[in-house]
Length: 239
Image 1 (cartoon, one colour):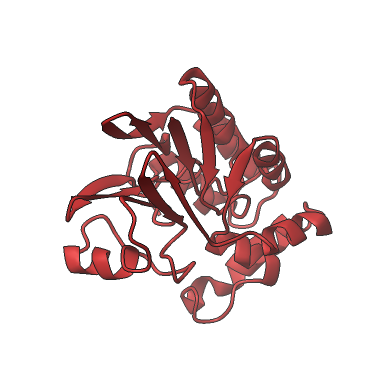
Image 2: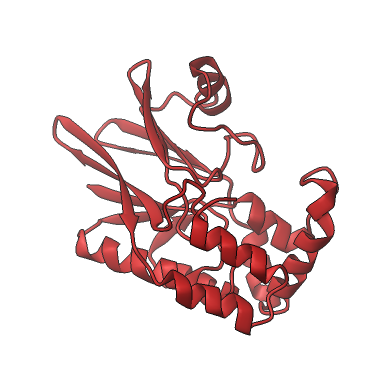
């Protein structure tokens, strides 16, 4: 069984096209999507349509919650609150009520088991869509924030846009990175693969190139709010 985990598409449908093509080439058996589907990118509707076209399990991210009800004070710095809600309004204007309903009703956690390997999947932490646990967090923080709610063998999350794999207490913790807005300085889409065979578990981070300049042009020609900053983010792969 080979499972692909993708997250944080953020309306970058061009990057998602490239990732899905890469997944098809790798003969993946199952896809799981860890949220943040359409907000902050130039193609929110097409991103949702691509996700719907998959036979995939999908969970909610913080950006999906923001699309549904707006960005609230205290969730982001006050200096960017107004702009982020303008971006949210731009996104919502390109969606239908059924899209908002679908985002609202997404689950927040997936737990499943294959060949006695339990896997726990969530967006940020099992208890929060918003809390950030970074790659260099101390082991006790990772255990308490990411691994305490369920006794799994593998824990997989997104949200921070920085892919990594760590091993703690004989268990695997993976971050998928981001399909649409990587923040680790490498301007390539990121996703994770877990392969489970008899007697073995293989985990890996995949990086996939896409046409960054085409996406940059989309931000500018579509009059996206905060376009210049978002173009810099995708070019530099830094927040």
